[in-house]
Image (tube, rainbow, N blue to C red; front, side, top):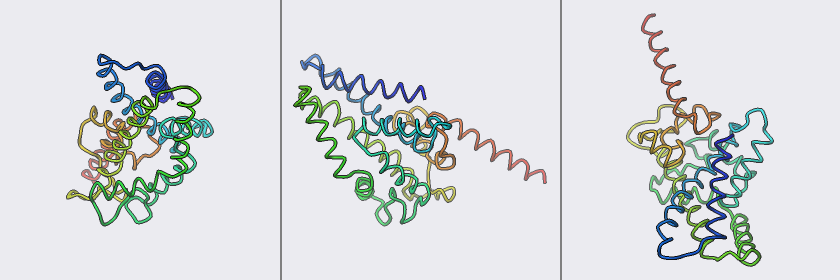
Length: 242
């Protein structure tokens, strides 16, 4: 819960500073680039916070609080609807790698084909209308420059879409030479824990572990791998002594 709060507060700090208080100069450009890069990562984190909420991992004994935090994170990130995404994501877990999976694109393993499927599943006209309304309030009511909104909100949000899609959907679920380990139809990407955190909050590097244990929050996935590996080793040792 504290990590989720820290991610949301850090995102809000950059969002508010960049959109409402940023003054441009040549000297400020490198700082702005760094802020956009960090905000892109934090935007990915907002979606992951909402994702953990969908699995009840933020506050396991308080489902209403899970929902409030998840809905807030998605609204801040890109005016997404928690109520609309929740059944879609659980369908992904139920029908992983089949025609009923909203994240799976059969017959076209290309990045472009999969992305169109991903975009159609999770983005709607209603979301675009909500983003437009917020942008109008920012500019016409609160006086924010439109360019600042594009740079400090739109660009990080789009960058996060790329991270979430490539590392959280396409690479873990596409067919490749190595067969899937089980019926979860999910690969874990071998990129190491640091890159796994930086790319998609461990949902690339530990994606199979997530499908095996969807109630494990993002920060617990490396430990979950260790636990699962230990269970396999213990089972193998037991079988060897029979």
